[in-house]
Length: 305
Image 1 (spheres, rainbow, N blue to C red):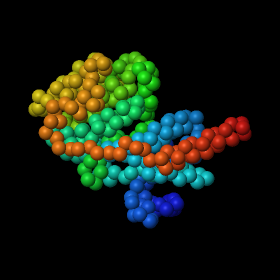
Image 2: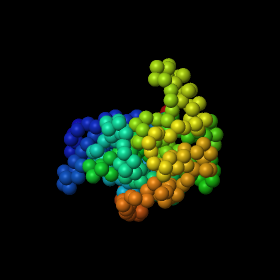
Image 3: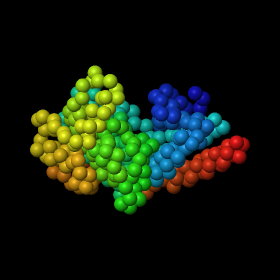
Image 4: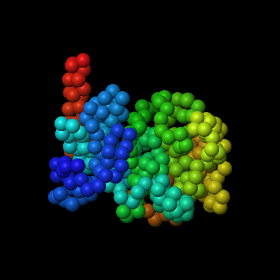
């Protein structure tokens, strides 16, 4: 791939649902970043545009040390290039699988940062709705960062959400039962599954792997809806208590992210989370200009039909 403005592509990192991702380097500053490359025609299609628009609008207004930051946006006649903070330590799923589960102290370091990120977005009224190991990236300094805001949604007061989304094994019982739900309470359940998997290196759901895919999904969904979870062996009382609270089948009984940060399991942690709550106005303006441009392209396409 050729240079993109001041950025030089170095290597292809992988593909998402509608984008390719490259590692690039800013030729002046030397900073390495991840670049999502999205075809304009795909971006403005009815199937993609509103998710894409929602993700950019919300992500551009978020600024937290444990959330990947938008760095820059460039558009040409064919593609949109979205530059995001690079986390080159892999994702948490890879790390957990490589070592066969983390110690409580290792998990505590990452999990405090994850919950601090959730606390921050929840205070902004935003539910992530896709909290999972694969959406937690690790930096070269061994810190965790929440990423992928493609399914995030602004919570409207106490109005329940209705859209079923996310990844099955992390989904809260109320989502499985297709009930109206509070997105932030569902995030807490998903984070509880993340914590469980970090320690146990597997999910709480006991389903034979050799079942046909449709039966496997139904059996998994049935177990999730029941909320019947056996906690991992050999964990501390404090961790048992925290997991039990987060994985309560009644969403109203789950703690908030702020309450989790005060839980005794974190009592011996020395991590201090410092972040600038002020969003980057330059990025907000770039996003608004991009979306105005894409709105115009969508309107022009309609006029041709």
